[in-house]
Amino acid sequence: MSVVQENVSPVRPRTGRAAPRPRLTPVAIVYLALVALLVVGSVLVGLRGEVLLDQAGILNILTRATALGLVAVGQTMVILTGSLDLSVAYLIGLTSLIAAETMAGRDGMVVPGVLLALAVAAGVGLVNGLVITVLKANAFIATLGVALILRGYLEDNYTGPAGDVPRGFQHLGYDRIGPVPVAALLMLAVAAVAWWYLSRTRPGYHMYAVGGDIEVARLSGVPTRRVVVTAHVLCSVAAGLTGIYLASRLGSGAPYVGTDAGYDLESIAAVVLGGTLLAGGRGGVVGTIGGVLILATLDTIFDDLAVDPFFKDVVRGVVLVTAVALYARRMTARRARGRLA
Image 1 (cartoon, helix red, strand yellow):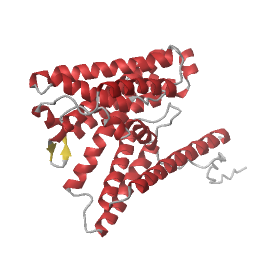
Image 2 (cartoon, rainbow, N blue to C red):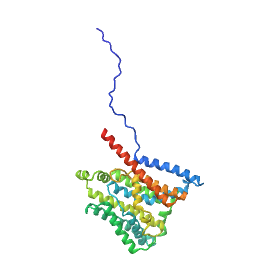
Image 3 (cartoon, rainbow, N blue to C red):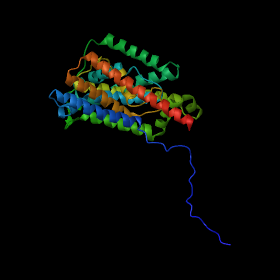
Image 4 (spheres, rainbow, N blue to C red):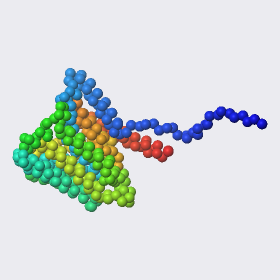
């Protein structure tokens, strides 16, 4: 009896599920949007016979991005924990005054001025964190209340610029390497340290955990109060660095240098534009820097095109709302796919 064997290729079982397609991350989207904005902006500015990305244009973009980038890095940390900080604008003005008045035009007082400004900033952040965690106040109300206290102090004690920054310290605000300001490199260094802290240390992981679900984090042994307080202290220190940088550019302290530029809402806008969820738990400083560069590039393009300030704010608002809507739609689609899986 012979046995006939057939050479039949094995049939692979069907899983019933298509292979997942690679999807762009929010960070990739924000940098692609930045590239698209640079291309479109270059064309529009070129139609007027000017150049957007020449040395002056790059310097303008990076200078605008430096102050906002510093405070936005700190804002990213508090938003990742599910909180926020509305006191940073007035704190920037306060720290610029503390630094300038302490320095009083003397080179030997630069270090004490910087340290005192950062210490006061850390103290304000500590108060914010304790009011939120110990008194159980809503972050919006708590930091707005602290902002009003700082505003009252500034209005009662200052009517204009004060203090004197020594000429040597002004190199921080004006020196550059080619078209790149030295202060922009400082901002990128601060962002790199924040990225390392958030992605490579246990306290950084805890910030994501608290923002994801504070109750689950607490039951898992995460010191949630300490995490929120730490985030607010770091945010305020970043605002203090912004105030010190602006004092170096202005040559003195200015009580409303932070509020005139709207760094409280601008920093939140940059963080959200960079893909960090306002609810917390998802995002990071890499996307935030992209959001900062988008806002700085928009401002530079508008200035080159001599756009009406009202229309400028309208466009910025439309960009922000569109970005938030797109991120929300992606999150909804991701949850739907997770339920179907």
